[in-house]
Length: 88
Image (tube, rainbow, N blue to C red; front, side, top):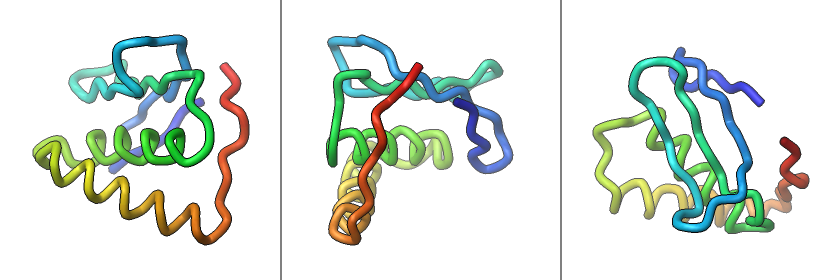
């Protein structure tokens, strides 16, 4: 899947990774967000938002990214948003 985040193109991939729930490579192209394929439910939503925040605001500190992603995912979850299964 491809996404535009603040005018920059990112590939969003779901992979079998073990060490992290996700990562964001926002340097020079190709830019990529990787999400752990086994995540489901609110952890998947939270991780996707977390990595997209890193892509959007590279200078945002990790604590702010964590807090903001958690807040956004909680609101969306309470509103009934549910992720579909990740397909890659």
